[in-house]
Image (cartoon, rainbow, N blue to C red; front, side):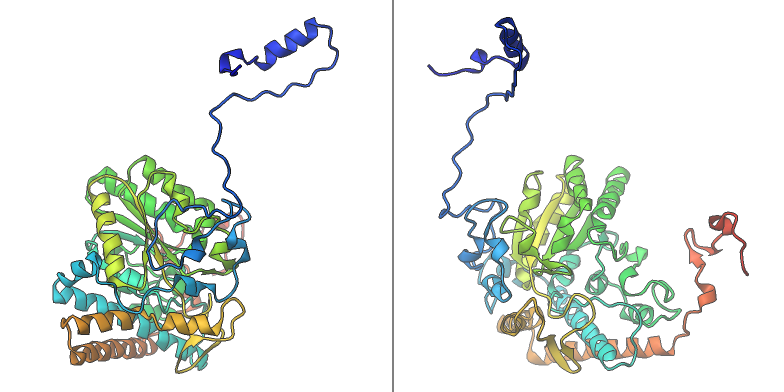
Length: 445
């Protein structure tokens, strides 16, 4: 006879019946009857990802013998990122058709910002490795220039962005100046934070740049807070957060859930470059795509080629439109690759692109991803489409190099910061911090 929920005794009734029958010891464990769960997949059957990714990703990289713990992600080995390598040239698809219709000036802006980002970080790589200046920490993002340059070109001037400790490209993408950034890196008074913040604290509220964040994942709630402010004030602004792959492993990620709950005008982008400071992303994510972790809260999720202007534009445009329309947040995961080590330039050389001999990736995969340089791919597409000539491209490169060189000269010529000024210009931007934070301690002037 089929057992229905009505035929099942609850624990209290079961114990009463056993005691009435004279039982002296009773162990009862009851669970509600529910619809039987579907059979677990067999060991050989791949588990389909919730989020559908680009067709060019190697199918073997998506195979999971079982969901969750024990999947193929735990057997990840250096060199396997080539299974996610995008095609050499942009596919002839709807995304490429869409950017081909953009004004030439907009495409030129994107290319210039990508080139400027690449050249500026490469310049500081050579400066630091050459021992000329070695102030503070420096997290390079060479190889990931396409995402902020393209995404932020679609934002309004008053829209917000919140970045990570690896935020030089984000600042350039939103319109920041390399002069103030170089001065900040070299600890000069003309820097964004007058030389006291360094590489991980760059900000410009006048451009909607709410700052870099050295706390991994810490920009999730900052992005949500800015989006909440925009919604309450009905300004039509959107807020964009860039995080790396390891940011999703932090508890700050809850801000995505709250943003979905209140339909905040936020966009959360993931720069999946496979590598964090403590390991590779496949080792801590039990699904093929990191954005799978957000699918359950109802956010639209898309996985796209982060080294393609066309693909980033195709993901960013609907996400921004959705946020402005009041329909809530989206999650965009961009597959990309970082050419250098997590911090500074281990394995790199002056005058040479890339880092070599690192234990968590192979030199062959490094070469493969450098061949997908987002700047070169976009340049090749612009010339092939007849939008720009080689001479125009060369002029933009020369313009970027001059801007980099000028920014260094500006920084070197600027006055250095002084330790005795360290307590000045603090929130709320008064001349000096009041002494109340010292409590009963004697203040030495």
